[in-house]
Amino acid sequence: MMKAYLIGLVLGICLCLAAEFLFFVHGGIPVATKGGPMPFERFLAKSALRSAIGQEAQRSSPISADETNLLAGAHVYRKQCAECHGAWGRPTSATAIGMFPAPPQLLPPKKGVTDDPAGDTYWKAKNGIRLTGMPGYADSLSDTEIWQVSLLLLHANELPPIVQDDLRQ
Ligand code: HEC
Image (cartoon, rainbow, N blue to C red; front, side, top):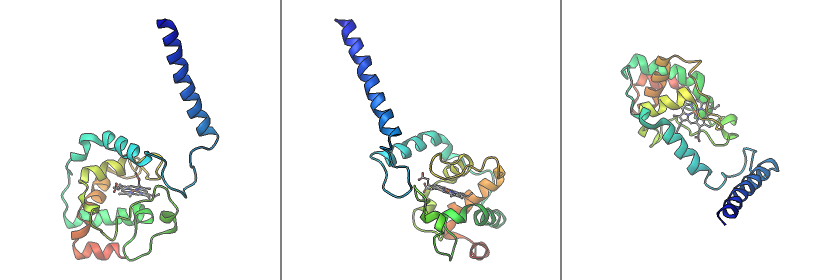
């Protein structure tokens, strides 16, 4: 009796996995960038990201948000991030328009952008976000540069005029 129950359970699980596999390989899931998210996609992706970042979001910056660091952050932003996340005074790029998920437009600053702690932005810029197009910069930017661009975004709505001018170039 118990044995039959166990065999049934294992068969049931195998069938579910097989159905899922067939669904994937026969094009059941959207792979083009046009079209909306799958059911629960956004919820699952956000939850996984939040738990991966965990306590690291609370990490505070080892450098201060002075003019020199914000200016350096602006240089990093213009060179590495603006194409996807928006340049001040320029329309959204074709790259950004064509991506799924869409890269949030971080500049010019809107309400909400500066709510994320610098540690959260630092983690995302350093490690990237898999399968979204958001690159990880751990191997191409120094730790200091990643903190500088994170501080720039944290203070995006209160930047000194010299940094704003730099971003508008
Ligand atoms: C090739 C395009 C691309 C480039 C270049 C890029 N990003 Fe992203 N970024 C994305 C996408 C797409 C997302 C959205 C990911 C998602 O939906 O989870 C994202 C998300 C983010 C987020 C999370 C925003 C939020 O509100 O949750 C931050 C912070 C971020 N990027 C910072 C940066 C920084 C800093 C740089 C430059 C050093 C950068 N990105 C360069 C595509 C890009």
